[in-house]
Length: 244
Image (cartoon, rainbow, N blue to C red):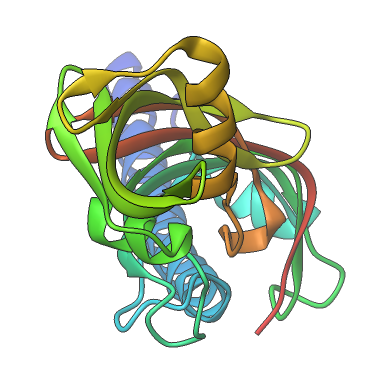
């Protein structure tokens, strides 16, 4: 004769099932979290190695792949956003415009070969250019004198005479040509400020537009801001290939 199941026994069985369920769920969650963290760190290392080549940095950049859970992004082979911070750009690839520091955000990154090559739909950020690097790109002794203005002293022929001219002005960006030039200039010769017409002719002869070439991944410079620590520039771009 079968003994009826007591209410206490049914309650104990239910409690055991709940405990087992919680333990199994915790183990699965731990395994998923561990796998997610491992994949996150591995892809960050791979992306940093690829970016190092394009940025021309002596050390891999700092890379933060944004968004969790991460494994879903890996399976889709698509990263929503990657934040990149790097120093000393252009040192290993002979860039015409070495950059002291860059802070970039890459958007909508895709790969078809498991992160050996990556394409980003767009990017934006900021960079810092030392004035020594800017002077080298200009090819003239351009000196920052504060308050957003620069000074240049050069010997120049003026009406058949060689004179020492001092030119001051602020930098203006030509976004379409990706160059900067002196704007709002003043020119002094032997302590005298020249008339605007003569000053403009002298400036064209002394200070040519400075090309801003060598920006990583062919990003465009969208803004400039001269400060005491260097030239701060805004960066933007679309359809950016990242290759080793």
